[in-house]
Amino acid sequence: MAEECTHDCSTCKADCSSRQAIEKEKQNEGSNVRRVIGVVSGKGGVGKSLVTSALATVLRRRDYRTAILDADVTGPSIPRAFGLKPGTVNGCEGGMLPPRSKTGIEIMSLNLLVGDETEPVVWRGPVIAGAVKQFWTDVVWGDVDYMFVDMPPGTGDVPLTVFQSLPVDGIIVVSSPQELVSMIVEKAIRMADLMKIPVLGLIENYSFVKCPDCGKEIRIFGESKIGETAKRHGVPLLARLPIDPEFARLSDSGQIELLSSDVFDAAADEIERALPLSNQ
Image 1 (cartoon, rainbow, N blue to C red):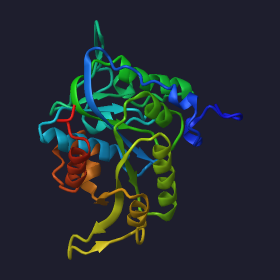
Image 2: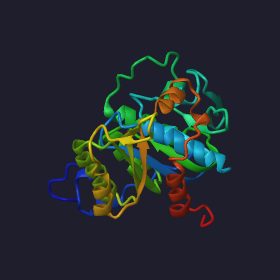
Image 3: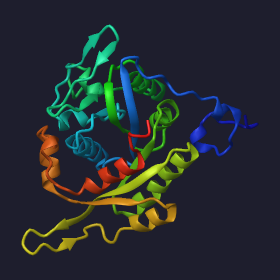
């Protein structure tokens, strides 16, 4: 261990015994999760939960068994997007049973355990991180091909816990076009590099709005730097998402599985290519 160790591996480049000794949490005996993908962002409000929901939906349509572990404990929005109500988690001898969406996507979120979805979670970081671990160890996920972990923004306790405790196969970074966000995206990518987790690609949200009359793409936030960021780190740019009121309408009404846009197909293709199931 380094002489002045902060005990925070996300800020340290040393390949010391402390980092090597970290063991992944064992998944529940009733679970067989084959691939785990983190969906991260450097800051909030960039559409991370939308991307998580959409990718789980698209891969489910391709006949994969998909699941979502909602690690954004203090700001969970996944249940609302799928029309799932609070208090719908049942238990069995082996642990908690995750509710299923209309198309069969398994979902676990704190908002499914509380009585009121507007009830605030006033917990300190270690308690939140412990809850995320329990979503992995105490939930009977069954057979899952691709699990998506919807992360809270930033590089704090929960992302560090997920990277260290769960067998994350890769991450997808979500951003928006502003220059400030591009800088924060670099932090998320570098954290993944420190934790030796592959970055599967970048997705930019709010890239443009399409004029309904002439079809011209209007870049409200100006020219994006995401392409340069992707090239600099040698990772693919998987999608540029438009500002589309339909995305918000489907999420707010609990009908995200009716999403008809093909803008997420390239990202799903990359997941299939980079994390094939046949090798396991």
